[in-house]
Length: 227
Ligand SMILES: *Cc1c(COP(=O)(O)O)cnc(C)c1O
Image (cartoon, rainbow, N blue to C red):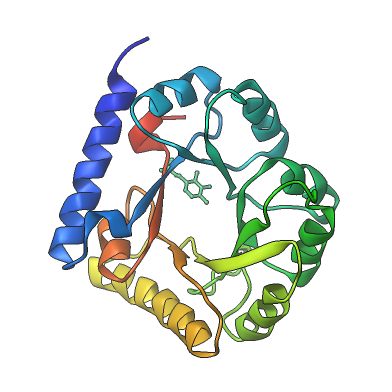
């Protein structure tokens, strides 16, 4: 196996560190989620050997197979893709986190189907901050009611918000969208929800997301290569 995944990880950590310093934040205030969709277990093993433990997946069946093949490693698996309501069971049974909750029915099913021997499933609500018409994610207006309803479900723990902004034309436009997500996050905290996770920022908008308060960035291509 070659060393490029370890080199890429070191590069992404350096970028996160620089963005944190520029924002007056400590580097450990941002978690790197390695998005391993379409890559096989060997690539994940290489990343783990380089110190990476949190992995993001979009496609449920692919992820379930990969998780089974990597049972021997102490990894944390995050579902970041859209979930149809008839696909919640394998997610509840195999993942540690879900970032892409966009309606109550999904969260209710995940809570009902989470096996008792596992810790609560950690959830983020996906919010459609910039109003992209075809995108998944709850609208900012509907977010507070959804968050309050999810927060009381027994077998899940609401941790925060996830957002996938449209590419903006300028860095300041990009930051404005991230700032809106941060404001929604802080508003929920003020309403009494104990949230600590703002999943925001990918390869292209990592610096802007960290400047505006992201606590988890999701990076695939810059670690594993082009899909
Ligand atoms: C694929 C994906 C990523 C990673 O994207 P890259 O361009 O490969 O870095 C991050 N977040 C979500 C929701 C994704 O689907």
